Amino acid sequence: MRYIKTIDDITKDGQVTFGDGYEFVTEVEKADAILMRSTDLHGYELPESIRAIARCGAGVNNIPIEEYAKKGVVVFNSPGANSNAVKELVLAMLVLSSRGVVQSMNWVRENAADPDIFVNAEKAKKAFVGRELKGKSIAVIGLGNVGSKVANACADLGMDVYGYDPFISVEHAWALSQKVQRVSTLEDACRDRDYLTLHVPSKADTIHMIGEEQLNLLAPDAVLINYSRETIVDEDAVDAALRAGRIAWFATDFATQKTVLMPNTFITTHSGAGTGEAEANCADMAISELKDYLENGNIANSVNYPPCSMGKARAASRVACLHANVPNMIGQITAVLARDNANVQRMTNESAGENAYTMFDTDEHLDDETIEALKQIPSIYRVRVIK
Ligand SMILES: NC(=O)c1ccc[n+]([C@@H]2O[C@H](COP(=O)([O-])OP(=O)(O)OC[C@H]3O[C@@H](n4cnc5c(N)ncnc54)[C@H](O)[C@@H]3O)[C@@H](O)[C@H]2O)c1
Ligand SMILES: O=C(O)[C@H](O)COP(=O)(O)O
Image (cartoon, rainbow, N blue to C red):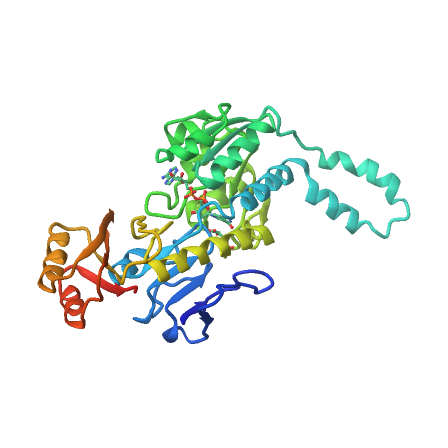
């Protein structure tokens, strides 16, 4: 039996199923793995029993992924699984910030008691005249799963789309509409744009990437949309730009102490991924990643370890070593196996950044002494006997 601890409401109806051989536990100390969403794990005491964490969603700035890598804990996310949901809400924000929809609806409710409301609504409507998206320009910052979909949808709406992503993947570059124009600096992306939408992860080089300088480059009456993370914008600069009329509207998914006080701001409750479809997609992907790791040692979509697959564990034994990406690890591991006279059927080694993963199948089970000797190799973080 394998044990799973869930943190956060993974889906609205609370339904998540791992199938036979798995049980949910309430005490994290009894769990092999964690399934979670947005809870902040910085400072969380992670028990030794935890071997893997799957984040149902894209952003992993709530998880200390490098610290966990050094504990031999593989962290997964679910790339792309909620991107359509975010795209649709961003499109909604483009319309809401352009057409006075909310203000017009509020007017109707506020004047509900007016017996002449039908006639007076015709007079009131001039206050809510907006502008069309067609023909306007938009900069999309970050062209990954969400940004590439937003960029393509905006191109389909007849907008002039400018994309900025110095680290774009080949896959996402192929998926981009040819109408999306590539720009190579953030400044060129922002210059004279009517709309600016942000789709980058929160990390050292993106924190406050949008501040006074970038906001000043936008066209008059520009709209800023942030459905990535609250850290990406300098909130003081956004507040000042809104109050000075430098930008017309700000739409954000993050209710912070500062955004809630800003004028001309639409704020949602971190609801970008808030659809049943996105929740189900994320849960399905995260669960299958965890199961393949726990049962076979295979890694797909990890954010702190390399991808690695040897298929189903069919040999007598399968062992995985999680270790630092430094010289002579394979030499030291095979030396220990040679001492035990273990016959290796298959072996694979992959690395990503500071971390590496070595997995092997053997004809027979390794004895306790050999496993202990593997654990004693300097720079080995964890040894897992999978089978
Ligand atoms: N509001 C929500 O509910 C919601 C839902 C999904 C994702 N998000 C946030 O949006 C972010 C993007 O999601 P995604 O699924 O598109 O992720 P993704 O990893 O598919 O795409 C991120 C893109 O940002 C690019 N990038 C990284 N650093 C950059 C930089 N300095 N300048 C420009 N581009 C840079 C990457 O190359 C990548 O293409 C997530 O990290 C998460 O924080 C929010
Ligand atoms: O990074 C993400 O995928 C989103 O921010 C969604 O977060 P959530 O799972 O808490 O809705």
